[in-house]
Length: 222
Image: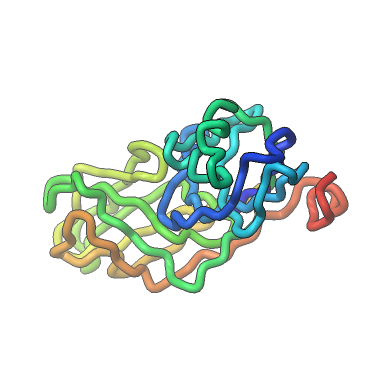
């Protein structure tokens, strides 16, 4: 997903020259890709708008990153000054996230084949949330098992199917009902900790806006 944000009071501190494509931002109980945060920053005297990656905190939820990530947003020499700002008021809007690659599955480092599997999805496209994940043996033997959300973007299970693994993910986009997407051969039988596997698919669902185009559309922010 992508988020457009507005920092009302940081005109001389923020730069969006961030080169951390795999960094993640904690949003409430979820984790969103750092690359999928797009900023329109006003007023602009504190800001350098060359890229689109920023961190924010909002009224109804929290966008949280480490001190290192937050200070990396600063203009040269402004890191400590930016850190002193603490909580930042913003406005934000989700827009689609586009990648020129497929959805990937990363096996988390503390997984233990064949007893315990933890995964997270990388390069999740569209304007979407994955709300459920289930898995089974690719050859059809055994029952489908649900994974649980361990923390943020990490899903895990201690009921690991034998052999190659297929998955079904439930994808929700905005106010639309969720839909199931089948991923065949999501993981090989000999999956390994830390490895990244290509699903061969990408998600491109777009959420329907819940307010008027002149309020939620692509018009300039005031």
